[in-house]
Image 1 (cartoon, rainbow, N blue to C red):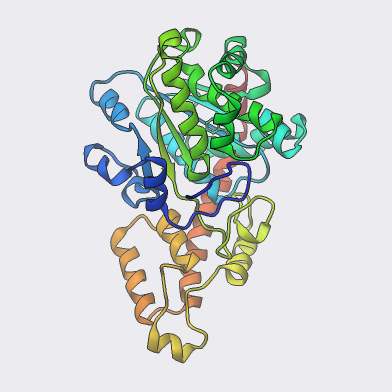
Image 2 (cartoon, helix red, strand yellow):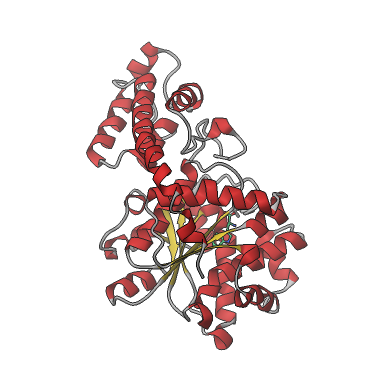
Length: 365
Ligand code: TRP
């Protein structure tokens, strides 16, 4: 059994096994029914889902739907975080009403981050980057867990009545009261847009990383149990793979050698990729030319596939050239450096404009 501790280090090797064990559908099954699939969907970065058909149906019938997700404001905004940010914007562009929580309560309870610090990180790192990536203020509720409306606050408490210590233990393993409160709060995050005060029952899509799986199963079970009272529609969810860290391990805000931040300078980008990016190449040049490299484990190639090379033909050529030994590790890294830096040049310029828009997201509701 694959165990996932959403508050611990998650290292998932086999995503299709994970799908089977958690009863998640493979995303490829719904792909043909999506009229404008994103690159993450087409490339399998979004590998699994629950009830996605509720969303395709709402889109087809032009019915309202909600996009709800959250962020743990724990450090700099890096390319691992961009995957969820792009998905938020994707659903906003399809017309979803967006609820985004800055999980300051969870960060305080489970990581000891002071509320003030969370607030600063949520705004300066996350919100500003979301805006720069294309998030618009229309139909967006960006809120802090410690500072949102009373019906939301009450909901997490009502939820406590519908579960047991045994269930919590089965889902989360070894917990404590702080983790329990975080979990109940997250369930309320996901379900509260369906309270009448927030718009009533509607299909909801929750795009998250695979590490959030236990929270989603728990939420969906609770939604079903609370149906008679609240009429909740079980939320739909998609799960994305976690982008590998530069050195091949987990990408983490606490390890600068594992990530590239969206604020990194061109020199830092170059240095980090050259020094740390895990290579699937051979030990010597002769050997590499003869045997070829392994793009499936090479992090530079994986980053191109997951984040930086939208053109399938170009990507395929890089894959084949690297595998045959024609393309060297150093050359592959250069391709990635070029791509990252040209993205960041544009992004960092736009970021200055985005800063001026922050207030449109904070002063309302
Ligand atoms: N637990 C999430 C994380 O660690 C943050 C989060 C809080 C969240 N509430 C949420 C994610 C609701 C999705 C939906 O990143």
